[in-house]
Image (cartoon, rainbow, N blue to C red):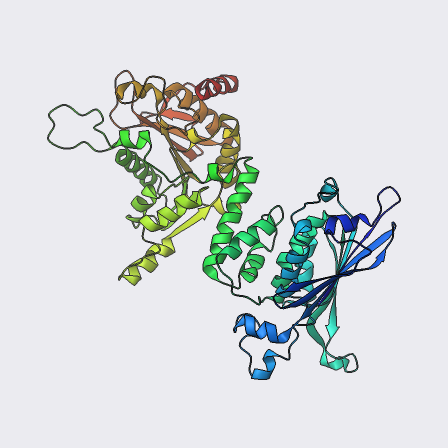
Length: 528
């Protein structure tokens, strides 16, 4: 197997700096032992204007058979001879990728003790692999490398040049030209060489997911062929592929949200103070024999009643968390298509567990019907998602108060502007009611993750302006026992496309709509 890396330079920035980056001196030819043969590093040319480093891997077919133990391509041959007579010594594959990581480990990590500034420098690079298996042809090589900024030349290798009628083989001569950092180029090769070969010479264990994500950091999250790359790299092991895709999506959302992945994926944990309070007796008379209905249950009933009232059949639960509302929706046959969306993959997995999507039990027919109606999707509500368009209704149940006030306009555009369902149900705490909870300290919000909690006037001002901007009518309904002074513990707004602008309760009286400046001020004050 053979691979060359070439760069050009000037007197001020000599091309021989490549030797510092690779930690291999241009005046020496070096050899390294690997599990499957010997790797050689040499420099066919090394001047200030042009420098080429070559990696030659001599594969020992006997060692490959003895160590492989039947794993990977060639491990289960049609005959015993095929274990020893194959393309492994000549065609680039996962063997060459592993050799790259072993021989150029410091360069792959972007480290250079002698010249610390070099790894961050973009270089004019030309990388050539004379023989590369491409299961998918030259076009697949283009699809994999071109989105990374490479100019790609992938020339199919004929089966036999003397017999052109036989057509092309599955091998290509690959040439990549671009100006990336050397570490980025090596990490891309480490992942994509075995992807093109669509095989690995060793058993793919769960730790391969970590290797993929480390090497794919910064480029795999947004690659258009992300699913194909992940599936092939992990040897088509679906459980590993799913885990990797979930972590990649979380990394993408965290980067877009300019926060840590751990902070985004925080929806599952100990019960929050608000959840505990909602299970307490809320406003019932002393001595009552019947246990009062928890506020969480009353909220779900109010949401279901609103959805029934607008005749919704296809419903989005945006910020679905661990799936309590999804379970209630599934119990009613009128809701024919239900989509749960949350940024936290842990929350979605917990929802799947609670709803027994992964454990259908003995009633397979019922399980299939439920799976056909329900879909769980990871996504951030502050970024436009075409998958959310075209639904009858969307629910934002106790969601908006978890969004930083400066991001509320983005959420508004995603839900009311881009997705634009026929109806939207929004519930949020009424901060005025907090004084009625003895267990909640003064000035403390109901949940540690709440960015704000609005008064009734603030919520109506926000909802009224949203309705006016996007052509919805909005109606307000109380949820839970309504206190004559503090109002209800939860406030609900039902938006419907068209009609009059803002109404309160069921009497269609016009609510006061504050100006944009007023809403911005109250939002800022609530957040503080």
